[in-house]
Image (cartoon, rainbow, N blue to C red; front, side):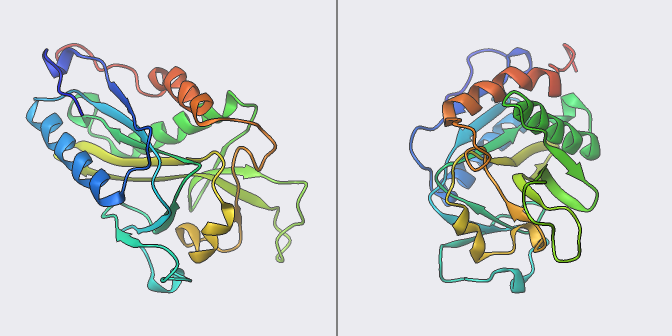
Length: 232
């Protein structure tokens, strides 16, 4: 990631888009280096948009029994909040490296802003994303599908959220399903929730490309994360 030539406290957030799939360990090392530089005041905040090759990650709350098929894809300890998550081609991973020292040291508000960002982005495509108490991520109602066995309406997850903070700089972030192979999620119990499914923009009937999603993420970002006040 390039380093800015001016005071990082006065520069806008840098947007980085990787055109090739990035291995998880490579991504983690790059992200941790950037977070350290942001905390030291030598790099600007950054949003990194990428895809991973097929893999599973285990958050700090992951339960071994939720790893249904441990031999299917590589499994990595993510050291972020949350449980098991799948990443792979067709899914936009958004690593969010923002300095909460300048944006307010409020983890709940930060997670709420991430949720709001995803919901606003989905709204650009006519999708109503919703938050559910006790279920991390962003969900889409599926009234056209059969209800769950207990009679509750079917809802599918379209975006996952998992973050970590170091010196009040965020990393990890969100993932939004554009057109991944949804069958790949069957090797885990995504985020520990078995009674609901997983969907994607294309699965919902929308011919959305990764570039379309990136444009929507960029256009909705400032509303979710207004620039911090000068000198903050």
